[in-house]
Amino acid sequence: MMTAAGMPRMPARTLMALIAAPAGGYTAAELGDRLGVSAAAVSGAVRYLQTLRMVHRMSRAGDRRDRYELAHDVWYGVMTSNAPLYDRLAGFIERIGDEQEDDPDARARAADMAAFFRFMSARMPQLVDEWEAQRAHRPR
Image (tube, rainbow, N blue to C red; front, side, top):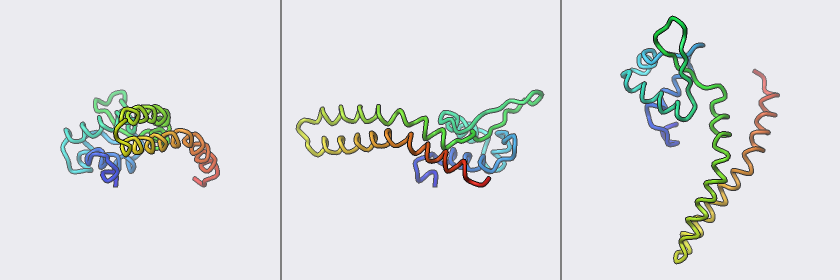
């Protein structure tokens, strides 16, 4: 499912493995064993997930190997950290549309896309508030 949403295959597999990780996460070797892949494949996947701030690398005193775990509130963080980008992206897309003076279809596509991102930018704070209210009343 994650690859269908655009995530590369190995980071998607690694992310799913980390959802089921025990307290303290997994080492790269443990992830490799769990997924049946090389340490190099895990290393690249973890690096990718770290750039998205979905995974944290943790060091433990006396242990030479780092451990990896899913970031707390990973989806919440990913969605809310991208919210300010939507408005900026809308501005860039509007400029692209404005430059398409001779192509009304391109201008319309750009206007529609920019309107969508402005909508997302405006709605994201409300969605976060709704989630926090629902989460507070959800049994754990």
